[in-house]
Image (cartoon, rainbow, N blue to C red):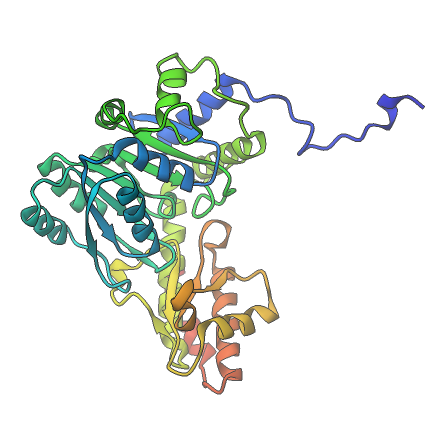
Length: 373
């Protein structure tokens, strides 16, 4: 028997090399998704790669940064900025709310030397979303560089780097886009490229380096890739964008908005002491809904009880200290559907009842259904 006759092919393993032209075409489709004319660079890793790379490329000892904290990622960005030597002014608001444009304007009034603003659009970990368009207008007035984490928001709500004046906009495929965690992208304005080029501490000849992509890929006409691309992740990202194009971005965003509205209304009517964690619906992210458990009910234990009936439900407890009081319903991507929301609320209702907290599942259903219509 020959070696060829015993070989077993596999669609995930026996892939043809991904060409530079194919790679560039995926970047172009991501740019259209963001409605941007900025350079879009796809990074071969989870979104933390471009998130950190963009900060280290543009921040240094002379940088004065306003770092907005509405959840755990904002805290991480502040750590990176300080590690770069930047002077950092944190603008922190309670996790159950959102920052406002006036908050940002007041921070500039107090520290007019600010030249860099970092912000998370939607914090899936805490369930809030921030008014980027209004904040972007304030940042533009001051001439500061605007860095945005849109990893959770892209596909669930509008993400418009050009219209909002965002200089560095990082997205990932793993949430509302419904794809893998191993690939991400960043749109980069000309101002941001210039800031990187002038920064002697910007990573160069490094996996974190955006300048390497600029000089060896973008400026070279996107003819030769820096290294072998992650084929599976690139094909999955392309499939995500194609699926959104086919369904229609507005339809995809509407589906996420309906899932959030249904979850919020259903949880409020369910009883058992469960209530929305983010106080105002206008400040609640469409990508995920966070819920506060009643006193005496530990969120992580309630989630474990709910998942015992169906481990595939998009339920999770909050991270760290929030594991005691916060539940996340991660209704994004393939789970932004009536079935996923209904099943999640039903499981939480059953878990609350088991914990001695009476619930009304019928009232929950009646409250949630109008969101889908």
